[in-house]
Image 1 (cartoon, rainbow, N blue to C red):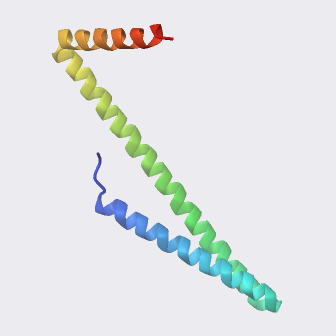
Image 2 (cartoon, helix red, strand yellow):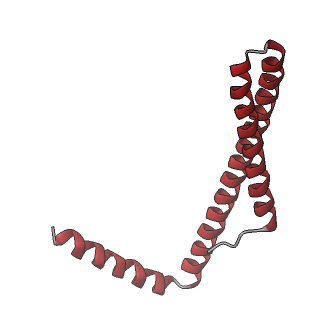
Length: 110
C-alpha cells in the first residue's frame, strides 16, 4: 500500500483549512443577510467568491496531480509486469493457464 508523503499531508491540511475558511465566510454571509446591510453583504460576497475560486483552483490542481500520479504508477506497474513476463515466459504462461482454468470453472458453474 502506498505511504502518504509529507507533501500530500500538507496538501490535505491546506485543503481542510481552505474549506474551513470558505465555510466560515459563507456562514458570515448568511448571517449578514439577516441584517440586510448592503455594504456588509457586498464585502462578504466578494470574500466568499474569492475563497471559492481559490479553493476550486486548488481542488482542480490536486485532482490533476492525483491523476498524473495514478497514471505514472500504472505505467510503472505495467512496465514491471512486462519485464517479468519477458524474464519468466514459462512461469507467465503457467499463471495465465491457471487463471484461465479458474475463470472457466467459475463460468461453468453457472
